[in-house]
Image: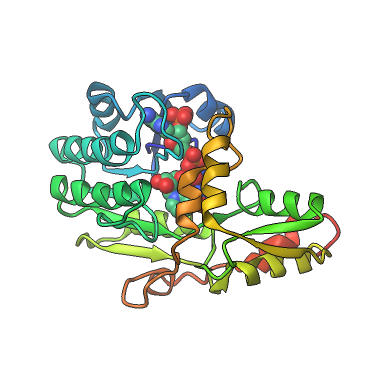
Amino acid sequence: MFGGTGFLGRRIVRHLRSRGFPVRIASRHPDLGDRQFGPDDPQLQSIQADIQDERSVADALAGAYGVVNAVSLYVEHGQETFHSAHVESAQRVAAQAHRAGVDRLIHISGIGADAASPSRYIRKRGEGELAVRAAFVEALFIRPAVMFGPDDAFLNTILTLLRRLPIYPMFGRGATRLQPAYVEDVAEAIGQIMQRAETPSTIFELGGPRVYSYEEFLRVVAHQAGLAPRLIPIPFAVWHALAWASEILPSPLLTRNQVELMQIDTVSSPEVPGFVELGITPHSVEAILQKMLPNSG
Ligand SMILES: NC(=O)c1ccc[n+]([C@@H]2O[C@H](COP(=O)([O-])OP(=O)(O)OC[C@H]3O[C@@H](n4cnc5c(N)ncnc54)[C@H](OP(=O)(O)O)[C@@H]3O)[C@@H](O)[C@H]2O)c1
């Protein structure tokens, strides 16, 4: 499980374990894996691995039945670029998995991945999918919509800003459509896909139960939090400049790839399998928010 210490990855680990799979978490910070999952499960192993390094990828895959790649990179720095993380390393995992005789490869990408996109981030996600399929023909692709959960960076940032700002600046006119998915539902889908008998290469797009415009989404979140913000449109060019400046910080509040993703609709296509085909009824933002907000529910 590459990326098993991350926001989505640690949930995938739990869902795989609950289905009886022994799991090896491969990340650069195995101590984090140990801390997150505790020492009591003998079927859970945390090992040091860097997806940029061929040898450590090969070692991590030794003897594995399946592999999930949920590694992310949201800001480029030094040798870590969108190309190295999302294309070269994704290809490395797929090629090494093929070489090691791994049965099942699940590659996590994102709705909107497109090798022809003008956005470097979105293009590299698309190129990554193509490179993975070329190296491992039966690879399975999961494209989640933007994900939410109690410890996310998405809803929590919106809530913090809604509470603090007298006026709320929207991405553009707030017309971009999004279909947020609950992170536990996505992890459940991946657990299920890992266990399925058949393995034809398939793309799954996992979007939540409702499509919102960004403005609608903000109003729903604000309403549920008992807030009535004034929403004002801010041109994307301004957001790009802010994101560029923010990326200088060690933990950027906003990244350029987030802005680019807010310029395209990230909604699942009806022709592509998703939660329905997997028999999963996805949770709504409203239901999870109710549990997250201190004075509701
Ligand atoms: N979050 C969303 O809303 C969202 C939406 C759509 C798609 N996705 C996709 O879902 C996947 C998981 O995203 P996330 O938000 O869960 O990411 P995350 O919380 O940032 O976690 C990233 C994981 O990648 C690992 N990692 C990063 N660089 C690595 C390297 N060089 N070698 C080994 N491991 C490395 C990190 O572990 P260490 O740092 O310990 O190595 C961590 O476990 C990504 O493909 C992302 O693009 C996310």
